[in-house]
Amino acid sequence: MADASAQPPDVADLNVRRGHFLGVTLVAFAELWERASYYSIVALIALFAIASTKDGGLGLTNSDAIEISGDYTLMAFGLPVIFGFLGDRFVGHYRAVVLGAMVIVSGHATLFFGDHTNLTTFWAALWLIAIGTGLLKPAMPCLVSSFYGQNRMRRDRAFKYYYMMINIGGMIGPLVAGIIQVRWGFDWAFLWAGLGMTLALVVLVFARPLVPHTERGRPGYEIDGVPEPPDPIAEDHHRLRVNMTMLSIIFLLFMVWALAYGVFAGSATSELIGNAYVDREVLGWTIPAAAMNSIEPAIIVLATPLLALLLTWLARRGKFPHSVLQMVLGGLLSCAAVVTLGWLAMEIPSGVTAAPVIGLGVFVGAYALMSIGEILISPVYMALITRLAPRRQQATWQGSVLLAIGLLGFATSRIGAYAESDGGIHRVGTFVITGAAAFAVVVLFSILTPVLIRTIQRYNPMPIGADSQLDDELEILTQLDASEPAVGVRVEKTGDS
Image (cartoon, rainbow, N blue to C red):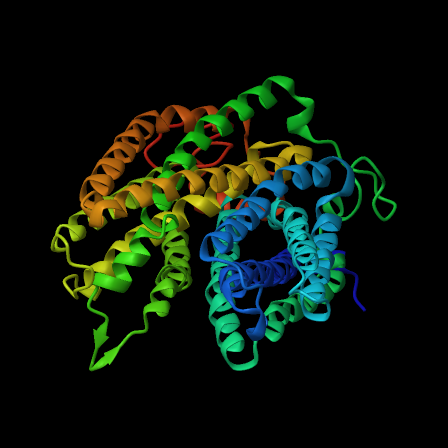
């Protein structure tokens, strides 16, 4: 076999790119099944809790079922902070992902093989799945980022691809679980995502050689005989303070989006409107009400490749938008979606509980605004964390984001409850006021965007020549400076012209 070092540079670079793509694909495959597991359990918990013991359920009341579902959601979103910290400091990101997959599989096995009609067994299984999610979920973005180092453009595309896989899992999870539950009962519905997670676990084990050395073992120890490389962000205390400040400021923008998203979709208000007031008839066929839940993930799956092509086209013209700029645009689109939903709510007659008064096209259009905004903000912030945070804080940051989303989701559920109270007379005001207020905050961030971009570029340069794979892309991007290019921001060139 020929020595890899003897290969022409273009062939060697192509092989490296293929290895990176294969590695990200395998990691994203595991994340797909983790999301299928999570959303399957979320879709089944309430149904299982209220089902009679004769039908294999717990025989609880609706309020008890809602409490169990809410508790599990808080567990799944809260534990990643704790286990993200452990993954950063003690376990290592790859090991945390593999261990998390194993624990998730054990949780599904407990539901299938154990007596899940016993509350103790049922809660033990939920805790296992939630703990596995806490280990795996915050470490996954760190693995995705590790394949691309400082290559921001390829990393951003990889995160959008990764996010598309998340939504594929979120789309098929509850759909297949619901079908299996109806045909074969809760036992097999609980098992099915566990089988997928088992396959993902096998894939992760065999994918280890593709994972960069920095992510394979425990932090601070030699990994396969290779010492852990230094972390330039952690060693430069001034750069670390600046980066943490930037991440904290941009986190506020992310939370404004999360608020808009929660009011639009997370509070279930748009779901209720879609079920009761949207004309779901297409060519004589009425779309099932449950299928309306698949609108958002379906749009994300369809739009992500198109958006990636657009960004590639912009990159080749030296106009690749900076991460902060993408997030601001995503925030504006998401706020517009909330205001649009308020405008559509004006069509609902007062006191009418169900009437097809909203067209399917405009309703899907509102979801499209929210979904495209989500693509531009959520995976981009995940990628930004892996660029600005030191290696041993990245999973902790990812877990903190999940916790904040969970807590905000609880708050927006109360906002949604207010919108639906008194026969829904507060819908229009709730959506318009919330959307407009969030829009104003995002506009303020758009004014601050050039300052944020310059600060990030100044302390996080992407040096030409430090990575041979970057040189061609930097040349394509007109080499605006020695860091990352940004649309709408003038940056002085450095080095020889």
